[in-house]
Every structure is written in C-alpha cells, then in structure tokens.
Length: 78
Image (tube, rainbow, N blue to C red):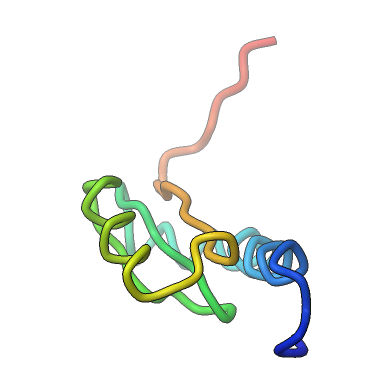
C-alpha cells in the first residue's frame, strides 16, 4: 500500500489479510483478540480493552483491524 493511501484502503487490506489467514490465526491465538496492521499481527490479548489501549498508543486506530478469533465453528441461526 502506498504510504499516501487512504485509511479505508489500509483497513480493507488488513481485513482481507485477516480473513485469508483466519484458520492459522485461530490455531495460534484461540479465544483471543488480535490486532492486524501492515498485514501482520502486531498484538493480541484476551482482554479487548487492554489490547485497544496498547494498539491505540502505537498504531493509527483507523487502519488497524481488531477481531476476536476462535477455533470453534460459528453457527448462524436464521
């Protein structure tokens, strides 16, 4: 991504990387929140608030993807 790219473009690329690598991330960080920036995990924690505090001090919040990961399969009730 160009350094002058929009924050939405950066976020979108980070989110696409997160989705593509979800299975691997779930194996490594099961039941944790992960922060993705620059198409890599930059931090993780079981406490979302602690993770957000740390990430907010080091990375631009509008470009970081923070998601919870788990090995457990998701069930949708329609």
